[in-house]
Amino acid sequence: MAISRSGRNFFKRGKMENDVNVAYTLLSEHTAFHVKEAYKAMRTNVMFSVPNEGCKVIGVTSAVPSEGKSTTVLNLSITFAETGTKVLLIDADMRRPNIKKILNSGEGAGLSDVLARFVKAKEVIRPSGYENLDVIFSGNIPPNPVELLASDTMKDMIEELKAEYDYIFIDTPPINVVTDATVVSRLLHGIILIARENVSRKDEVAEAMNKLQFVNAKILGLVLNDKMYQSKRRGRYGKYKHYYNYKKYGEDD
Image (cartoon, rainbow, N blue to C red):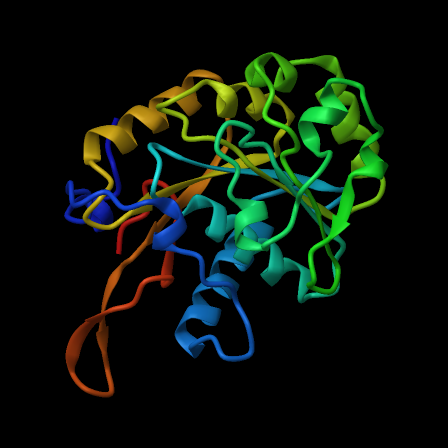
């Protein structure tokens, strides 16, 4: 399977860093203009790639760990919420949850407890601290995450929540590591794949794409973070962590 020519040179193996240290910067009034615009461009592309009517359910995954998917999905959720739409973010990475770490919250019951039928979904919905954005944290770490995500309880929960929100974003584990993302894909209108410059390998991204296509998931695009870009003001290249470049899969410059 081919990868967009515009991204090929970025898929090199670099030093792996812990995901907590790579991308825990959230959008705020102090965020650089070009970063905000990158997320707005991503939002526009996503909006035109999913149905107009009803609640849209969108997954976010990566090929391997440490590619910044959790911060990407949280910032994308914030960007959608800024338009006045009601947004819910679900942390379905029950093995290595990061959303609660990023928001410095999320203790107690969450998704795993809902899927194990200990609590109702509405009992674990939490405010994110951002207007129009709610969160369901991962909950207690279960022994059988993939079985819980494949259950009818998961499907029923999503259907119930779709009546309350305009967009539901689901943070899923890396697809090349575990099968959770492929299981969740049956519930999605589309899925976004995250890669990281000088960390993600071309073969890993291709493998992730193949796995998503095998289950007929609708791939909305590839987000490349940690991207090098040229400063027009200074005429030199600079590196900005947390700058995200959205490309439709197969799209060339």
